[in-house]
Image (cartoon, rainbow, N blue to C red):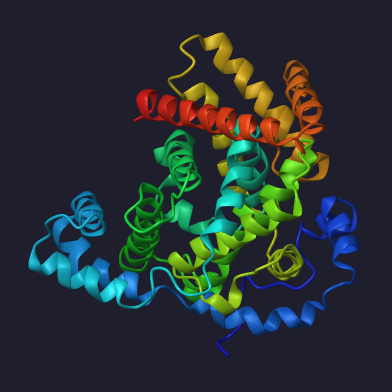
Length: 393
């Protein structure tokens, strides 16, 4: 086992409140047992493991032709368009390191998970932004690569623009089939991780003994859990009642995405129970948030003010208040206070959206209602994607 890094702390995390007083308490009750924190020690080596095949593409190609040209070449390679011999050689080595559609992948299950993701409409994007993303800032360690790659200088608008693009593209019908846009987005994200990791290690004072390798496999699993388990918890909090088939599909979908991103299969949960246990081990070994955590939270809090849409400044201020309301509604007072997020009064009007979805969910067992929700929700998310791409590029 590698030397235990400074960041690894058992039972000293602010996340302890989540599991004893917050939503995590219900998750443990559903799990039926209290995971033994000592089991988390087995995962320490993954803090020093990373995606070597993707990093090699960075060394062999991206550092020679630049990141934009590298991703254009990747897109062409996946689409079976022309790439030169150096580009083909680099990507052949990457794609030869894994099976694109392994035998265990079931696209009918993935389809159900994608349908859940779409039918949640705007609420899905709210959960991702105000619960999954904001809540992730409570950990100081996983966010250090964002600081080293200049995320604060680039602003939260760019990160949200990229995240919305990624999310919408991977949740469309058959989005993860080979050559589909969603599949491209996953592979491009894999290269973003590799490019960032290589540059951090080559051009900064990153301390791997303190933080582990940047964008390591254990932290990548936490991100995957954010899009799967934490997303599911947030949807339930918003009033959604996913079916067992949808839940199964959601976790299968994210197992496949995690695999495509280079996360080892042995880490990827197949069920909600496995995901709860994995989230417990990861969160309960995190050092508390720090000044960087609060700075990232503040940047996300003020993102509506920095965005170029809506055009009306008053409406952008109102959107800021709405997101603050959802932060408190989804994360709770304890986490929001740790991140120093202010409370809101005006933003409480957002409760109307929650009431609307709770009412609609009562008839979701009817196929025509569900199919309409999938169509309408997908269109809502696509509209948001277009807005971000149009006004914030």
